[in-house]
Length: 201
Ligand code: GAR
Image 1 (cartoon, rainbow, N blue to C red):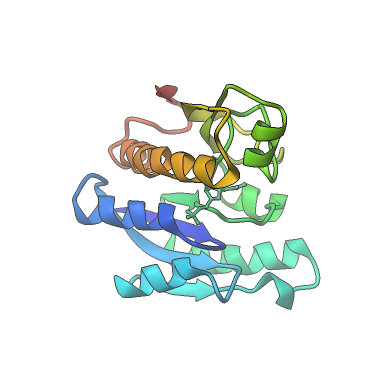
Image 2 (cartoon, protein in one colour):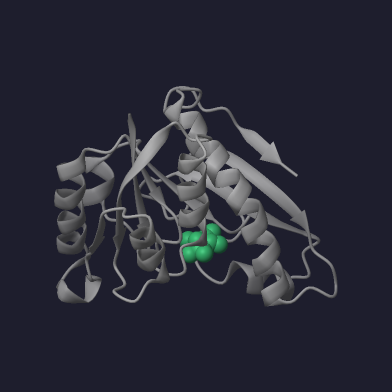
């Protein structure tokens, strides 16, 4: 069975989309562990509802980012995942984590990378009066939001759009894209050596 680990920091709606896709056999795999750095992440409640193993590793308990990452690595090593999905995980990973799971970590980011790496992407789109916005799923490497792109989805931006309306429409395409991409990892259509760039619109 293809083993998936999901890391979350907050709401966990993308996690829920992955859980649904595993339940419905869209993803031929199982979510073996959900890890959160935030003890209050709603994503943890979502995972518990489905009896998925959860682990809270609070970054505030660690002196350095590297020590925090090492604790995550140790937890992940226990379940030996085939794929690690950052689904709204709001910590920057250090080489400790990236090297331990080289080419096994993917991230979903709410912008059309390389535009707007980092935070507040919806705000940047509105401030710059962009006419399009989107989502990128990419491998994680040492460069923040800079790894190889696996899939992108685009939405139009209207003058009436607000932070909330963009967030809602971005979430809607994320919930389709992320399960689709993870299903392709699980069935072997995508791997590090064979990335099929997908464009959703
Ligand atoms: C998602 O929109 C995801 O793209 C974004 O956080 C949100 C999490 O939503 N990720 C990042 O900003 C990473 N830099 P969720 O908790 O409801 O899945």
